[in-house]
Every structure is written in structure tokens, then in C-alpha cells.
Image (tube, rainbow, N blue to C red; front, top):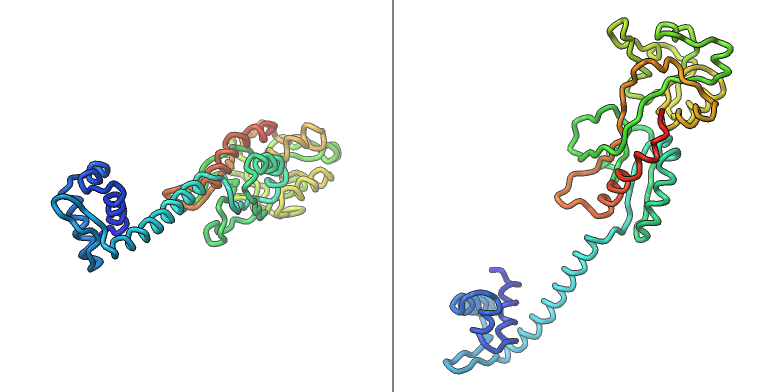
Length: 302
């Protein structure tokens, strides 16, 4: 038995003082409503309404039950309204995971704008370059920079694209010369990013395969792109940076492109989050905001 609906029906009968009027108000037949009332009384083991051909009246038990019905149903309605209101409100704590370099270089100004737009929201940002278990560690959204994502039970939405840019400091190129081919890179000091999907592969079209000078011994290997950028700007060698870091450094003359004619496979910025029939407003607001604003924030890419 649907107790709450039966209670609502009983309440309308009492409020309207007529079973026929209550049936019309509830858009059901009088016979159907009368059957519900009898079923409710049988369930409770008590007579709630005395009925004659001319009138109906509450029993003492019915009056007490009516008062409690009103209290409980009003509280239930208030609870439902509160939950629905909260479900539309962008509030609470939003836990986001993102790569360190990307968060510091690109996300920082966007997150400030996002939080000003949603003042009821509290952000918990964890910066980590290694891939994390978003669900296991309780993140609402994880930002990932990958050429492609592994099969997963997570929902993924592409936010923007970027490329890997081969570059070096002008001082290094002046002293060691500019390589004019992939093979020529092997005679240079190379710096690599250890957490990349591949060490620093560049396409060698002449050889018809991936030639990867970065797969061998490097002068330095680091697991943070900001550190890699600083080492490159210091003139220690040649390395591949994500375009959101390379572009500003090249524009300011601190770095110069190496082998710019080589095709570079694009990488993408994804927001991944757990599957849900009802996407939380805070997650939807964050992802929609990034879809709208992130491409412009990265427009200076090489």
C-alpha cells in the first residue's frame, strides 16, 4: 500500500468534507477513493470516518490521525522542496584533481572567476601529475591531459586541445646549433618529461615510423612540466613542452621552436567524472564553465 498517497487522499476527504468532492479534486472516481479509504482503515485497524447516506464525520481516532497526517505530510512536502531546491543550487564542496603545471598556468585565473560566479561553492583542488583513481579518492571531477583516454566507467568530456612543442633556449641553439632533422637531435642534450604517454616521440616521415630520440638516456628527466620549462630556459638542452607553457616562453623570446615543420599529434584536455543519472549541479556548472572559457585561456598556444 502506498501509505503516503492514501494519507493524502484521506486528508483531502476531510478538508473538502465530501468524498465525491475529494474524488473530483484528486481526478479519480468516488468508488476508487472509497476503496482507498476502506483499505487505509483496514491497514490501521480503525474506523476514521463515520459515513451515512447523508453525511460523514470524523471519529475521535480519525481526528487524531488527520492531525498527524497534516503534520507528517507538511514536513514531507517541505523536505521534498528543500531537496529539489538544493539540487538546483550550485553549492557545497567541489573536489577537483588536475595536473600541477596545467593548474598553476591555466586553471588559476579561471578558477578565481568560477568561484566568484558561484559564491556558495567551496573548492578543494588537489594538484597531482600522476593519474589518480578519481572515484576511489572521492574526486567530483578530474582534469586529464592525454592523447586518448583509457576505457573507463567514467564520463569524459573534451574541454580543449593542445600540442607538444619541441623547443630550446636561444642561447643553447646559438652554442650547439639548430638540429635540422630528427636524427640530428641525437647529437644534442635532451630533457624529457617522465610522466608523458611517450617520452617525447616525434614523427619521422622519412623513416615511416616513430623515431624517438627521447627514449634514450637524457641529460635530465623530470616529472613536472614547469621544472622542465625552467631547465630549458636555462639553456640546458632541447625538450618537448605542452603548448600552454611553450607559447608564452616563445613569445617572450625565452625559448625557440625546434623542428617546427614536424607534425605534432594533438593532445586533449578532458574533464572526467563518475557516471550518474543525475549530474550534480556543482559538477555540471564546473564542466560547462570550462567548456566555455578554457579554449580562450589556451588560445595563445603554438
